[in-house]
Image (cartoon, rainbow, N blue to C red; front, top):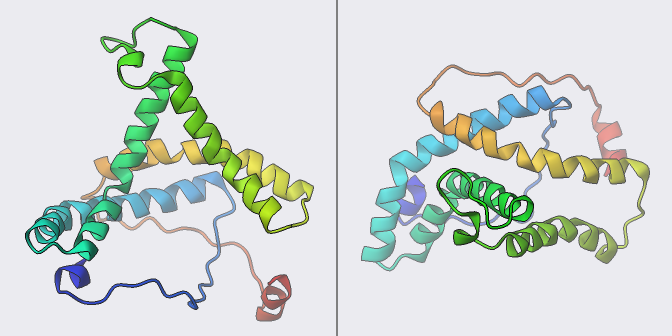
Length: 185
């Protein structure tokens, strides 16, 4: 964000290779993602307004792109709320959710179709890339659906704890040699 504000080039590094051990347990993953969200909210609170001003004042598309990226936690929370409204509309048509009528936000069937398309994207990519499907892949895909919804409380927790500076270590438990890693590639 500082680079975008200083007119430095910010770009995708297509040939970059990242070696990163992913957490194996939900608790480890939750902690790591909360830490990411805390940082995201912190950066957004410090740079979003500056980036938006630069974007509109200087017609700077890079600054606008960065400012939109900083809104991801807001989008996650908003999508969670809209999803709740859509399901309330489906299971209680014409009813109210507290004081808000769900259909006044977005018709449930439209939102459900949007969510379904999001989850059908992965099987399409697997088919398109002609990958061999195995049970491990199917299990991971099925678990991806509830995992995705965990981002909603994580984004909220990150927002509430954005000023918390205590480090929450992600425990890494796997051991893999470079030869084992290269064989998996």
